[in-house]
Amino acid sequence: MNVERYLHPIFLISMVLGIIGAIMGVIVWGKDPYAGFLWLLISVPIALFSLGGSLRVKMAKDIETKAGIGIQHSWWVLSFGFSGLILFPAPFFVQHGGAGYAYSMTVISLIWVILGIIGIYKPHADTGVSITI
Amino acid sequence: MDEEHKVKWPWVDALGDYAVVPVHPKERRTLTNQFLVFTGVLACIAALWGGGALGTQLNLTNLIIAAIVGSAIVSVIGALTAYIGGHTGTSTYVNLSRPFGRYGGFLWGLAAAGITCGLGWFAVETWLFGVMIHDLAPNAWWANVGVASIWGGLLMMTTAVIGYKGLSFLSYLTVPLFIVLAGVAFAMGVYQGGGIEKIFSIKPVNPVPLSVAITSVVGLYIAGATITADVGRFAKRPRDPVIAWVVQVMVIMPYFLVGAGMLTLGMGGTRITAALLIAGAGLGAYAMAIFGQWTTNDNNLYSGALNWVLLVPLSKRTVTIIEGVIGTAIAAYVGFAAGASLDPFINFLNILGKFVPAVGGVLIADFYVYRWYKKIPAHERYALKIGEKIGEINWAGWLSAIVGGILGGWYVPGIAALNSLILGFVFYAIIAILCDKAGISLYIGKYTVTKYGLAPTWVVKRYERGEKL
Image 1 (cartoon, rainbow over the protein chains, first blue to last red):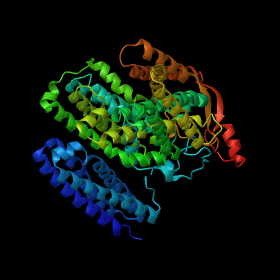
Image 2 (image 1 turned 135 degrees about the vertical axis):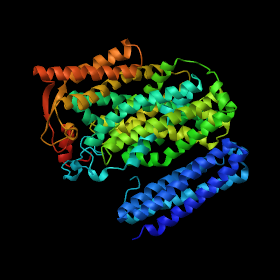
Image 3 (image 1 turned 180 degrees about the vertical axis):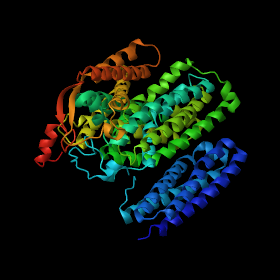
Image 4 (image 1 turned 30 degrees about the horizontal axis):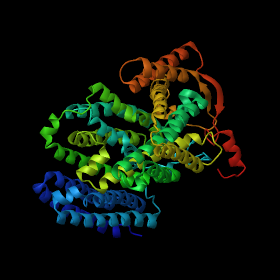
C-alpha cells in the first residue's frame, strides 16, 4: 500500500492550480484590489499547504504518518476550495473581478474540493487513519 | 507522547466520549485539530456578530485596540485552563471536582455548561439563527424566524449527536471559510467605506467608551475560555491546546472582530450577515449565517450533554437529542409568537454568566497556586487515579466562587467577567493556603475514584448489568 502514489499527484495538481489562481489574483488586483484580495486569500494558502503536504508526506517514515499528514493537508485544500466555490460566483467578485476570472476560479475551486475529498478518503480507506486526525 | 500516555489505560468509559474518565491515548489529536476545533467554536456570534456590533460603536482605531486588549485577556485565561485539560485528559467537570468537590464539580459544571450552554445559549443562538436567515430572505416561507429556528436547530443537533468527531469534521470544513469570509468582510468594508483612510475617519453610529467595548470583547468568549479543557483534553501534548488557543484568540479573534467591524463601520450599522449580502457576497452571507451558528451551537449542545448525562439516566446521544429538541422548541416558540422576547431568558443566562468566570478563577487558583504551594508537580496535580480519594464538597471553592461572582458581577466597577474571575482566584488562593497552614480541611466527605472515573452509581450499576447507556 503506497499512499504517496496518489497523494503527490493530488498535491501537485492543487499547487499548480493555486499558482494559476495567484497569477489571476495579481491580474485582478491590478483592476480592483478589493476583488483581487479574494483570489490571493484562497489560492496562496492552497499552493502553500499543497507544497507543505507533499514535502511532509515525502519526509514521513511510516505509512500511518504519511496518511495522517496527507489527510490533514487535503482538508486545507478541500476547505479553502469550498470557500472559493461559495464566494467566487458571488455578485461582487463577478462584477469587480470579471466574469471570466470569477467563473474560472469557481471551476478550479470545484477541482480543489474533489481533490481534497479524494485526499481525505483514500488514505483513510487504505490505512484506517481517522479523517479528523 | 508524554510519560502518562505510555502507561496502560485502566479506565472503563461507561458514559462514552470520555465524559468522566481521561481520554484514551489513541483518541488524542494533533495541534491542527485543536486549533480548528477551537476556531470552529469561535467562528460565529462570539467574533463575527460581536465584531459587527462593535463596528457600530467604535471608530476603527478603538475597534482595533478593543479587539487586541480583549483578546489578550481571554487568551491568558483560556490558555491556563486548556493546559490543565491537556495535562490530565479530563473534562471540565472532572477538573472542577478538585476545587469544588465531586458534587461541586457536578453542580458548577451543570450551571456553566449544562444549563448555560446546553439549554440556554443553544436556544438563544438557534433563535438568532432564525432571525439572521429571516434578514437574508424576508419573503421566503422557509426563512420565517420560527421555521428557520426549527430546521437550524435540527441541523445543529446532528454533529453534536455524533460527538467530538462530528464537531471536528464541521470545524475542518468551515474554519478556512470563516477566515476567508472575515477577509472578504474586511475588503468589502474598505470598499464600501471609500478607502482605508476614510474608514479611519468614520464616526460610529452608537458610540460607547473603549472600556465598555473591551468588556464586550472579553464577555463574548470568557465562558468559552473557562471550559477549554473539554477540547484540550483530546490533545496529544499538554502544550498543544495552549498554543492552539493562544493563536486562535490572539490572531483569529482580532482578525474576525476587526474584519466584521470594518464592514458594519463602512456600511453604517447593519447586521454582519445582511451587510455581506447587500455588499454582494451572495452565498457567502448564507454560509456565514448557517455554518457560523452551527459550529458554535453544536459545541454548546455537546458541552451541555457532557454534564446532563451525569444527572439523567439516558445515553449521551439521547440526552443531546432531548436538549436539542427543547432548545429548538424554545427558539421556534419565540420565533412564531410575534412580539415575544428572549430578554428575560438572556438576563437569566447573564446572571449565570457572571459566576462562570469566578468558577474559572477558582480552578486556576487551585491548579496553579494552591497545588504549587503544596509542592505537587504539574503533571500530578489533577491526574485522575483509581483508588484516589476526592472530596465530595470543597467548601472553599464554593465560597470563593459565590462571593467572587456576586462582588465581581454586581458591586465592583470595571469588566464584570474579569472582576469575578480575579476575585474568585484571589479568595480561593488566600482561603486555601490559610486553611492549610491552620490545619483546617477544605473538604467535606470523600469519594473513592473507581475504574469508571467519576461516573455516578446508577451509571456503574447499569453498565455492569450490561444495559445499553
